Image (cartoon, rainbow, N blue to C red; front, top):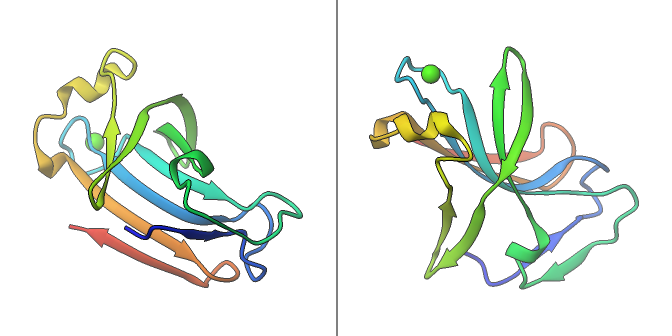
Length: 127
Ligand SMILES: [Ca+2]
């Protein structure tokens, strides 16, 4: 976990995600994801490059539900930082499907960092 992030790098196009930490969720264990929780920053049009240590205050914390090829934001969650890790605190009454997630095998992690245009992104996934 870095202590500071550089947001809105000049090389990142407007409206592109420059940082994303995401948990994909497979609520029914069929191997396909029904949604995700993400801590994300999108470069707003014309935003100047800036350095911040307020990572949580500079990011959006959304719950997304997938339908076909689209995703819809259906709520937010409490994001935190504990030691060297993010925490995602979700009330399963907000997303009732999440109550059926009882195993780590029903999720995967994605970290994405963009340093330029569409293809200029570093992505790590677990597992
Ligand atoms: Ca599924």
